[in-house]
Length: 363
Image 1 (cartoon, rainbow, N blue to C red):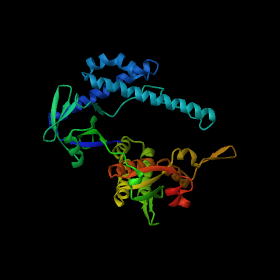
Image 2: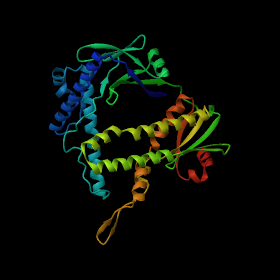
Image 3: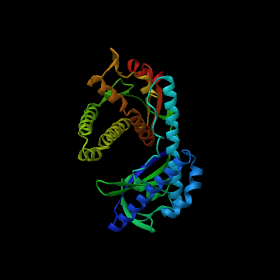
Image 4: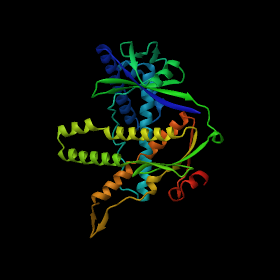
């Protein structure tokens, strides 16, 4: 089986190299916005090949981008418009069925790209050298930059197998560049009959995960800190939005992503603990596909031709349900299990909490 990992490499640039990388990022972002306006003017085109044919020479001449970058830009913009068209069609179906009255406005104007993230092709736009150095293409030519990263990822890169495309990301608060490299690993397909242990993992909101084995011993991973952090950021965002000043907007931008990174770190810690408990294990996970559509929400009621607002408790419950990151936790358990020689499978979620763990393992 194939497993895709992302190696995050910190680039130690000189002031001249920093300027060169920043220039190529801004040129790439300008190219994305140029193609986005072209697609919007041509009936909101989503075909990547037609976008590339109509904008390739302009991207090469006006923005001085490499052929691979020009191709990546057309594919990225095409993918964006395909996603918007899909959301528009789904919104039309929901409006017809009476699920919502809101009209999707994502295609009312050309999508605007703000984040300057560059996509590089391995072997053409970037290539690794000896002594932990990488050669990267810029607008003025190639530069060779030393890098550092997680020692296991660095070892895989130095081995030179499975290296694919990379993204150049800029951390604005720390004025730091990172190269996110995709690594494709070939792992032998795990066989269920070769696993010695069986494990069931139930995911939830109040408890992020509950782990149980055949010995009827359970381990609970509390989500109290995650819920408290989510409530804290929700209150802070509400106060900043009410204030509405420029400094409040700057504060919201500065704090953006903190809650997301915190949840990501917690999910990876929980997944790492679960996998480390029993290696070479058959792990059962709930199949929660469509849980948000099946789970009822608190809705405003009509009273005397007026909509009664939801209570703070109901709004908080709706927010917790909408921000539940069960898919991210299950994905982390799945790929960490594959690396450890274990196997994670999805089972029917019905009655798993009442009949657990035996329905998980034999049902």
